Image (cartoon, rainbow, N blue to C red; front, side):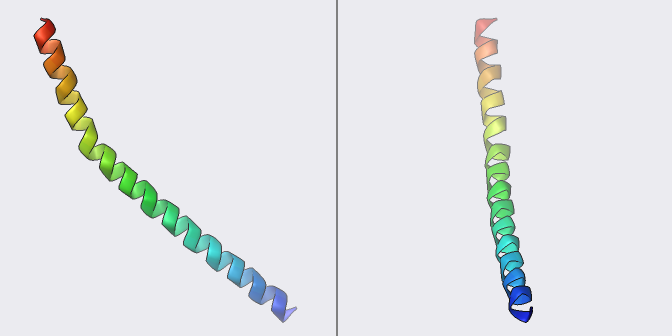
Length: 52
């Protein structure tokens, strides 16, 4: 019984670490988008300005 509890604790620890890494990855991707989006908005605005 004690071994099963320890195994379960190890599995939960692994899952927590995996979720933490996924969260960090999502934060990096979100930050990347935050810097890219204004660039593309400006690019589209400039293109629209040229069409006028």
